[in-house]
Length: 491
Image (cartoon, rainbow, N blue to C red; front, top):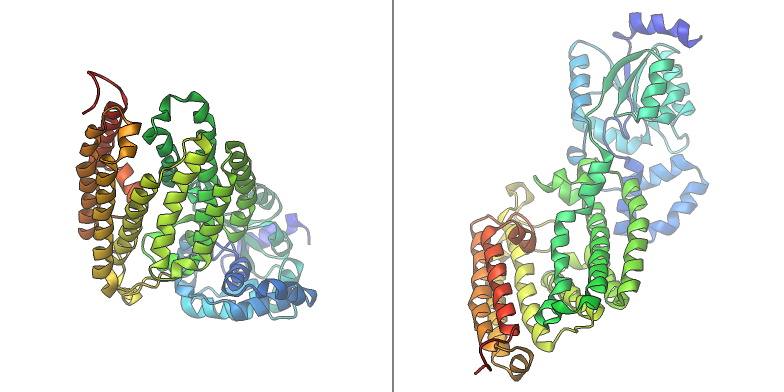
């Protein structure tokens, strides 16, 4: 039967024929096999070596084995809500709804049981991979050619649409949609308008790059801001840290999918919401890695950058789950930015700055954990997923963090009266003003955290806080005043 002959049948009967719904990329916004493979590999690296063995026995076998290992909650998957509304409306008027997917039977069964929408499930069984022509054959066998309407989203669905009485397009790419409109009777088009490019930029978390401004600190505290030759490598290491930080955030989001989807705010992140797939993330990472490595090599601080990346990967894969170790590692990641900036600019970080920054960044890392505990939803049972902390830990973490804040102020005050400061600054006495300013700023962050106002990383929070900017300006003026000789020798 030609497409021209099929159209009148689709127009006349499509509203009453069974509605056969694809799963991956259609009903849910993700590829379940990608998520199963990635999740199983993160949980057990040995899976990476088993995948080729399973694949030798066919893709259907691979899907079956991965589904057996995949731990997921169907209630938290990112469903296409517009499609669900359409399916519920069709079911309410008596239409038969069928889940027809190339995903493994175990995955399809769990999702169907959760939604309670489907009269029948047709899925891959470990022997046959129900994709493209195989799915078309299975649906024709079940309902007859041109006796069903198929809901799909990508180019492999053309084989099914050719045998269907009508097509429903869901978030289809422009080329797929254009071809489908010409070849098949299109019953409905559902598009939530999600832009992958915008989602990709969001996944990089450019607002978090403000933390990488720490690479400029050695240049300023050493008085080297007038050293023009130091600016180019410092800018390069700043950009390299931005690239590597984005890699860490992408990996963090992909490995934390289950926890993020159960979180009211983090569930809107690109990977958790389904705006980006695991495949998209894995495609972005090589480009960012090359850019980061090239800039790190040019800056002269590549070893520090590589150590930062190794520590970030260890943190994302395991260390974040280990109480106290995680906050010390977070503090270390901040300090590494300082160290790398000093290596790139040639104005190396002093032991005084390392001591001060270590306590400061430990305090900031503890603020991050305490703020997460404050925002912990009741349904999570009082424990942070993949963090190793419970709500009852909040008091002791606050004590540790506030103590670290005051210790950082103590180190700064000792530095101000040290011989090192006297030799480095024309008027070191002006730096005394930095001590109460830094302590005030940290106390303000802790107060904001205790009041439940800390919604993100403390440095990102400070970037949007006018009072933090005022403190920063005061610190800059104090530093400039301490450096610039005027009125005679310092006493």
